[in-house]
Amino acid sequence: MRDTIAVCFTVLMLAGYAFCGDPFRSEDAPRQSEFVRLMLERSQIMASLEENPSPEIATKLRTQLKKIQRRLRDMGIDIPAPPAPLMGEVDRTDLPIPRPEPPSLDGGRYRFDLIVSPSFSDNYFQAVDGTAKRSAWVTHVSSSLQFALARKGNQQLSLGLDLQRNNVEGIQDANWNSYGARLSYSTRNNQLTFQGIVSPRRLTFITRDGDSGRGTTLGIGSDYSQKLAGRARMRLFYRWNEVHYPEYENRDVRSHVAAADVQYHFHNLFAPGIGFEWTEARANLENYSYVEKTPIVLLSSRFGRAVTLNLRYRHRNRLYPVENSQASNYRRRDRRHDGYMYLSINLGGHLGLIVYGSYLQNISARADRGFKSLSGGVTLKCLFPGR
Image (tube, rainbow, N blue to C red; front, side, top):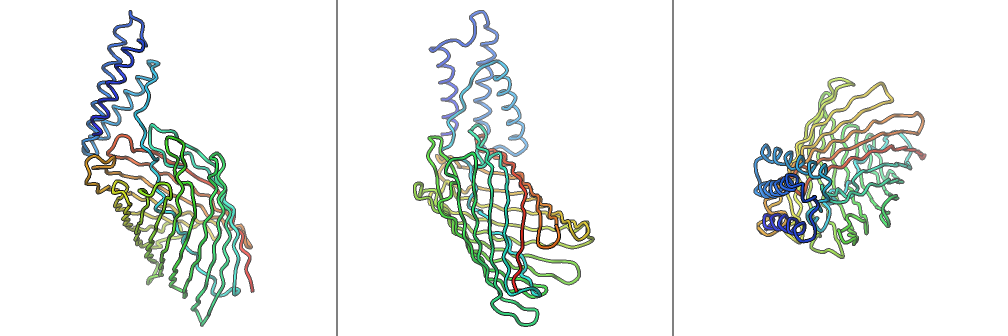
């Protein structure tokens, strides 16, 4: 089906130029011949990419396709892009549940955190190549209240409540809120947290017709970390998510995410780690279901007592187990390079500053599903300890 669409699109383009006007002068026959050759070669490459070639061959084909597209632009020819998919390639099933910070065992009975974090994203909806991208400035303002319910020696049971407001500039009606609660049990070397989060009516995509896709996310997760013997630590993580789209119920999705990592502190400047993450997402419409297997590499460095640098790289291998050969994600496989860094600076007293950035590149076996997204920002954190 996709091959047929690509061929028909090329035929219609050539027919349009034949019947609606020649973009070249009659004496420019060699240039016209070059145009026809490029369009036919472009169609053949797109058809070959649909056949799910090996990663090496797919990379070469995509490189050839980019050269053809540049050549057409250099010839001054306005070539309309093939029809874009109905919805952008969004990845909102993994709406993050923030990793909880260890509650203070020696401080007051409660604490209040206030966080202000302006950030920028150059591809807010993770729109695929060939479609319109929307950039946005986002200001996150969040507050967190934590209260110690019970204490005994080095053990503490605490309750936390979280509220976040996100103001999005550059995209109309895209502001959203999230609300969360968590229950944590901690000792000197262990912490176990159960956490829930809900985000109602969040704008997660815009269709090519300009309609808004709003989803309500409910997430429940657990997080366990432990300091092992010597300089090692480990972390186990699980999250269940459900995203409901009232206007697009075929996109409703339920996902399970499980992860584990281990990190070893060789030196203040060198604390590497490795991990693995597994995700399974099932949507009402099979076409939007996927399984993702992700190896993780971590690195932490501490400079004195005030500055800490954390780096994380995930190689996300995503498979869409779609059996319907007519579906748009049939035989689709993605490889995602997902990098993240944040630099934490202790400003003394009860203030902290974090500078962070992320990069996501999706390389897909399907020619029309690749995208890149770059984002970054700063965070100012204020801590108000209670008695």
